[in-house]
Image (tube, rainbow, N blue to C red; front, side, top):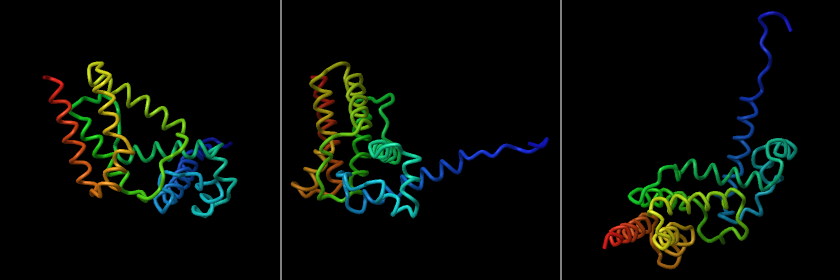
Length: 183
């Protein structure tokens, strides 16, 4: 290499390729897969992204890795974080989760086998709720139930609430639980 010449850095190109694949996968999820991601295969993602299947494999060794990254991206976009979660902040985080869930097709089943990322996020959420509730397992468990995808789906499908109504309902229940804790 001549003096002054820089080595080629492909990291930005690889990052853009990875983002393109994730965006195509998320578009498939939003277009009809909902939370049942079995149909979001490397072949389907490659076709949606306009790239080869081999390129998808280059960025994601397994379909599970791709699905885990999709889940992480969904949470990032919804600004869902468990860092320094407080009881007063639970309602806000639940609101962001429900608003994010509203962007998916509503008549699809939940994941039957959670991904590694989903399991890790559940553990992280449970720990944050336990810490926020001062170790009160019953309160943390109730907060967790109110915060779940299943609660959102039930409020929207069975009770026919809009997403803002579901958010208000759960926030009201969360506030009542936290308020009663002092009794």
